[in-house]
Image (cartoon, rainbow, N blue to C red):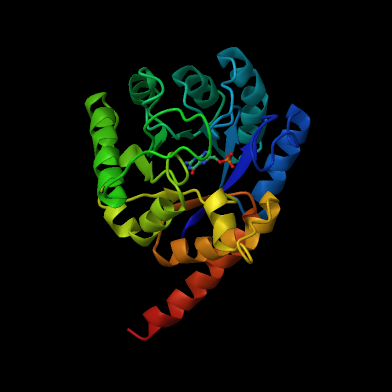
Length: 273
Ligand code: PMM
């Protein structure tokens, strides 16, 4: 069954839940709640990766995430660390994180592949090309599906060359990272092509702008991130039907329910075979 990766941003500036879980105690409580609501993995991040966000000092990033990772792992919760920095990845894995979730696929830090090989942890490689100044600036694609697939393959090869076992590498199409609505929907429509790179795919659509744009009434996109949760859950159901490995979401309970519904439906279909 598709896994639920619950989002826990320990940052003052993340676009959708920024600031709310900024103290360690509040973040730990939220992480436990996410697990209770159905998150199989809690994804802890100390730096907003949103285009235009200012980069956090590396020491500050570690200070934000470490007590949270340690406490959640101590509770028996499976933790991933959402970071583009090898140093933060190492500190978090040493503190109990099982997954390194790197939206840059190792491009933001040239030490990442070597450190991941050393740590022998699971690694999520996101599709990414460069830091962006605004959410509106997009990369140029001629054939987004083929390019994302090929560039992810290059990242997988780079990690293999650094000594990371192929079976530990998970890929992510990087929705919204240098991609506009058209590119994001094309990627969702062709997850099978992206999936030819590695058997496990994570999809991170939760509360993103293209989701808001899809449900806009009369062209008006209601800006509140939470108002995109039902639409996000519809995407989760479709991802579960496509047998994605995981979805990265803010609303873990809704995602869990949607995945279980798809599973019940699928079981009924399988019984007839
Ligand atoms: N998106 C964001 C952050 N981390 N990680 C993965 N694997 N995939 C994503 O799509 C992704 C991510 C940005 O969204 P946020 O500010 O809500 O965390």
